[in-house]
Length: 96
Image 1 (cartoon, one colour):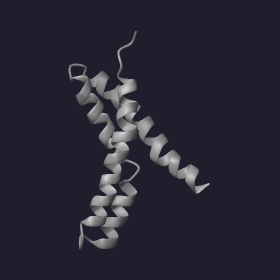
Image 2: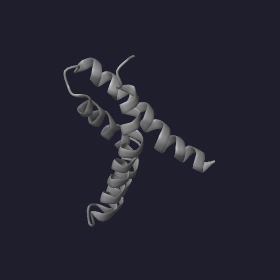
Image 3: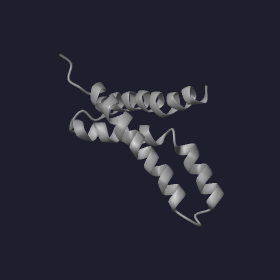
């Protein structure tokens, strides 16, 4: 059950957020290139599910070492790259 919840949080949530963010950015800033809209949508969507982890690591370590904080941040960037970019790419494709 924990695996299913983790999969929903680390895959489902960023995909939905990247899609919504890319639609919003495309509506608000239609003159931006497609790759910028994808990047602007994917990064916050990938970092959203790991934000509680970033906060808890920051509170636990109080910046005595930046390695755990960097590891959780890197996880967020990996989620953005693997999940957020394809979702935003699909959401911003031209309508045929």
